Structure formats: structure tokens, C-alpha cells
Length: 91
Image (cartoon, rainbow, N blue to C red; front, side, top):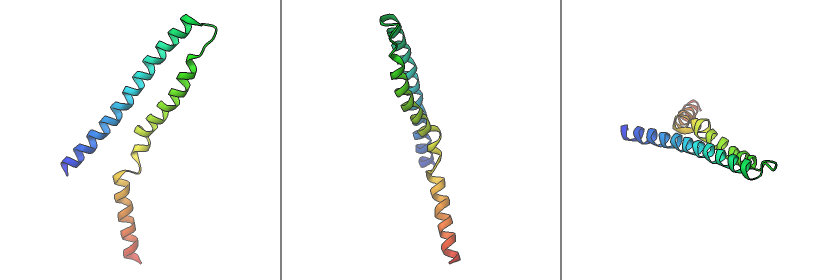
């Protein structure tokens, strides 16, 4: 049981670490693209397209790690199983 909890915790830490790696790459690459854009063609801004679409992907990655990972999950599954078992006992 402890090993299972450890593996779940380790997986969760890896998910969070992956998100922050994605975030730092997003920030670094977009700053670099902004500088390149302003140096090479300051009157024709294009860097924001990369920022926008990559930002949408980053948003969904964050939602997956910090919001959607909270459910359904094992606790939800166990709760539902117990709920269905209790329902069958009543029938």
C-alpha cells in the first residue's frame, strides 16, 4: 500500500514538474522570439501568434495538471463503487 501511495505521489510530482518545465520553456522561447521580432522587423509583429497558440496549449496543460487531475481519480472511483454497492444493498 505504501509503495502504491509513493508511486502515485511520484507521478503527481512528475506531472507538476513537467508543467513547470513547459512554462519556463514557453517564457524563454517567447522572450527570445520577441527580441528577434523587434530587432529584425519591429513594424511587423508576429511573435504574438506563437505566444497565443503555445499559450493555449500551456493553459490546457496547466488545467490537466492542476484542475482535471483532481477528478475523477481513485478516491472518486472508490466513492462511486461504495455508492453503487450501497444502492444494491437497498434494492
